[in-house]
Image 1: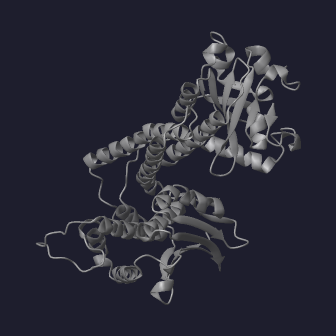
Image 2 (image 1 turned 45 degrees about the horizontal axis):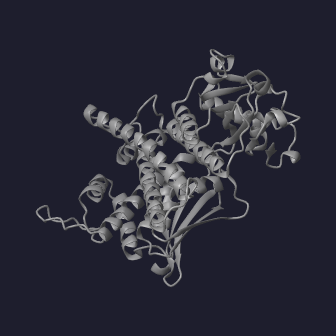
Image 3 (image 1 turned 45 degrees about the vertical axis):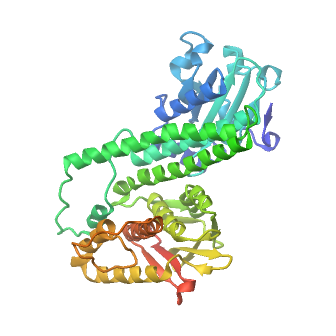
Length: 487
């Protein structure tokens, strides 16, 4: 038996760090995980692991105060017809192997429980004949370990690095999918994709302002269906990515150079598609975060990492890098986590769209006078520092200032920007009879750059903050997001 740094870890105790443990349990209750009901995403994960790795039993357990709840399980019938484990879908905490994983936050590999002096009299071994075990910690975005995804075998099993790697990948994917579904309230309450303009109108309106017009039922149904179809795209795509990764590691035999080249292309293209699907799904969050804001303490570094994680593949595909830095002393800040992630995500994606190859996109977090600041810019080996298309961006910001000073034109300007403008370097209205020019790849990327910039600005305003262009000369411009400290 091996466990990373096990000999240096204290004995498991739920009350070890009472405050942090209570936070973890509160979060589990908020996520609706403190019972023995199954979770479809987790069930899919255990089935995928069992079939792909050809193992008899796979479980996903959530560790509560006194029990480990089996939120998903595959193969428990192998332990005997109508056995208590399958019927109750829970394990008393004193008999749980996942409890050690929650405490140490490390994976645990047991080749043979019968040969382990500490575990050969364990409940799972004595009662059900479990001989081998490997568990991977489930760590949610807030940093808490909530349980484990585990393989159990009735025979001694030496787990290969490839099996462990696949289990780790599935654990990350399933937990990410669950958090995303919970955040978007899927599947219990499909809200559909939403329009940013409607949210802005609602958030800025005063008590005397009439409520927005009811949504067309047909459009609402269409949006719900589009949201669901987009969500369902992730499942087969995740399987494709997992299999492509395993084949590319040559686990099941060597590949020819051409096969390896194609497999790399498949994997990278799949990552880009997954990133696009994530963008579509995450836009649905806007309907939930625009009023009221969901303010809570957030780890700024983790927030920035989560905002940029899905952009790594997009940047890599264009031979770019993303680098994060934080001002010393900045750690916890009270903000709407989801909304700020969206602000940073689309702002950085806007920069990626316009940046040249070999660029490094910089994200720096700092604070000043009760304000949280995020700076975004690029550095390039021979182009220097700045932002893409600085002259056009400067004119764009001037147009936003003009629009905000003339509220009666704002809706018209936004509609023209999103729907009718085919040349983003010309902000004047085009003739209604003019034939729209054929869009090139370059013009489409430029349009995407400014659409994302527009969205980031809108979201920053929803949070009561601002998006600014800072710098004296075009060559030194930076984007600055300012968010006040929420109490």
